[in-house]
Amino acid sequence: MTQLSSLRLAVKLHDKTAHNAFEQATDILANDLQVNTTLTRLHLRSDQISHRGGEALAEALKVNNTFTQLDLAGNQISDRGGEALAEALKVNNTFTQLDLASNRIFERGGEALAEALKVNNTLTQLDLAGNQISDRGGEALAEALKVNNTFTQLDLASNRIFERGGEALAEALKVNNTLTQLDLAGNQISERGGEALAEALKVNNTLTQLDLASNRIFERGGEALAEALKVNNTLTQLDLARNRISDRGGEALAEALKVNNTLTQLDLASNRIFERGGEALAEALKVNNTLTQLDLASNRIFERGGEALAEALKVNNTFTQLDLASNRIFERGGEALAEALKVNNTLTQFDLAWNLISDRGGEALAEALKVNNTLTQFDLARNKISDRGREALAEALKVNNTLTQLDLAGNLISIR
Image 1 (cartoon, helix red, strand yellow):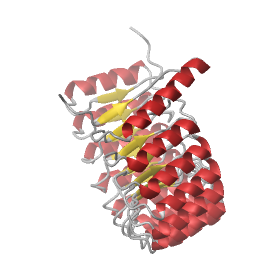
Image 2 (spheres, helix red, strand yellow):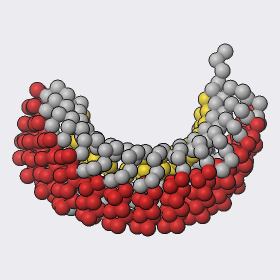
Image 3 (tube, one colour):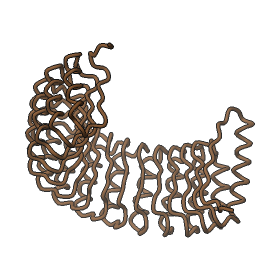
Image 4 (spheres, one colour):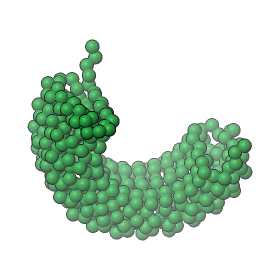
């Protein structure tokens, strides 16, 4: 008989009776885990488990010595459940991954888990996204990161962490030497928090992925992070989407890309970057030979920015993914990018949706597809391409042998 190593429970609860029944089932499962010697992974995502269920599972973790992964995301274990699980982490010596996203553990739960991380030496991944742990929880976890030497991934997205919490976590990154991934998206660390994290990146030598999307770091934070990228040699992925870094931040990051040789993915979507910032980033791509993915969606680089990036694509030989959706590049920008696709031999994914490209741009891009032999995914949705452009693209597809996905939804194409 095959031994069970992974268990996933998912119950749709429609009334209080069903809820109580599953609470009882969780209690029974927790009791079984105290003696079970084969189960290593348990998934209880979105099962309306309250603090009582969290406390029962915590008791099981104190004695179970085979369990490595627990997914409790989307439940209601609250701070009491978080505190109980924290106590379990102080004595458990096998657990490596814990997902508590969207559980309302608040400050108290966050502080308790932080205390546990100071003594736990096996946990490597913790997801606390969407828990409203606030600055106090962020500061407590920062203190834990200063002494913990096993932790590699921490998700604190959407937790109402402000400047103070951001600065505390930055200080922790200056001394922590194990964390590789940190997600702070959807908080409000602001410019000060961004500047503090930038200072940390100048000395940290382990972090490879940092997500700061939607944090209101603005121009000053963007410029500070750009300075950090000039000396940091470990970060490979940086997400700065929705931060209003503007042209100044875009230009600063462009200068950083000219000398940085480790960053491979950069997300600058929805940042109020206009022509000037687009042109600066294009110049950087002419000399940068490590960046493979750039997201500039929902900015306003217009035709000039599109033309500049087209020139960069003609000489860049490392870039594979480019997102220029919603940038108002119009026909001229579309035609320029089409010329670039005729000579570029590395780009595989290209998004030009929502750019007001009409038939002229569509026909130019069709001609490019006849000779391009690397592009596999191409998004032209929500432009102004009509039947003439569609026919040109259809002709191109007869000879193109690499494109696997083409999106033309929401154009002006008639049904025949």
